Length: 219
Ligand code: DC
Image (tube, rainbow, N blue to C red):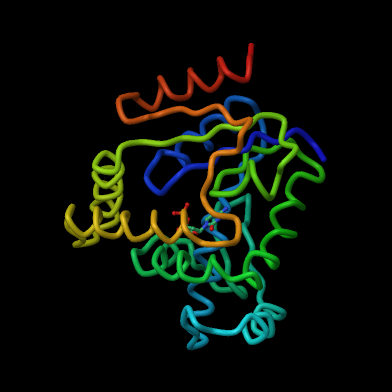
């Protein structure tokens, strides 16, 4: 396994933006694991499943499922279909949270995620990078932020995408997802004991990146 920088945190904590920038600065590959959970969420929703579905039934569907990221054009594909925009909707977020508690889903994505660190240094972001997927990561960071601040960031993202979601909707959605992510039995959102904790509520993106680069002692 190559060097892995594991970045975990709740929705809206700034993980994706920060992880992408750190990867760029260091020349590491970047892995957005939430995108994979979102794509699988869409697949299982379209297959007619809900949160009560059995793992064996889900596994049967996942056996023939292909989730792929094309580095050259930065697009996500689900069974050959471009889902880059579809996975960013509120609905995709909701279904990813519902199905991410399933063992069948976590097992399916675990191997896919680990493979990314076989040949390249990697910045991997998600909920369980430092605790489950890469417990021996080179560096671990846990980003957090006040829930109102996270909701306002999410709202701005939805607005940019042309969505009519209100700020109140974004807040309710986050509270529900935090609860699902933190309280699930398998790989819940949790800071690894050896992770560097950083609250980004009052930090700009540049300040956050600078703090992380200092932490990993990058020169
Ligand atoms: O980071 P995100 O909002 O795109 O993640 C979508 C959902 O996927 C999130 O609510 C929980 C799940 N997820 C997970 O369980 N484990 C990960 N490593 C990444 C995401």
